Image (cartoon, rainbow, N blue to C red):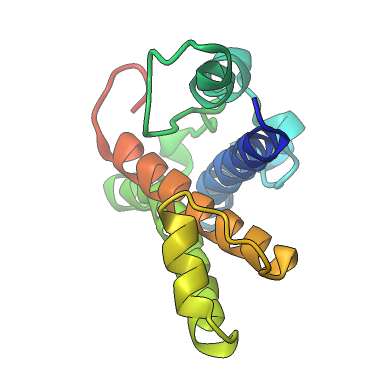
Length: 182
């Protein structure tokens, strides 16, 4: 196991936890804006992952997916998924129950889309503003680390690519109707 592979996996794990926290915070924020203060009263309108962590969905399952291939266990390969504690919502607190419930539900996947678009914008800045940026992004996307390239630029590209992949995976995963997760 190379230390670079392990470092990349740690970054992916941290990105996943941040993305899940952002997702659940978005649900809570939208519910609060639309009249249901349940999540706000429980302290869930926060990016602090402590308030959103589900031991299995946020820690164990993602750790197996992310770190498993490093030790020869690759049951799930490719897409990194996870989940957090569901945001509590009492729909009777909404003024327009059906519309407000749908907006609260969509706030999470939209937040993942927003994070993916932000990461793409960062990658586009690297492509256009850094000398040789297009090659750095392309080689990094193909899992090839370049020698002689500024390591901070390559780290930003690695984080950007991982953020796009993780957030698009979460977006699709959250749009699937899988009881009891939906």
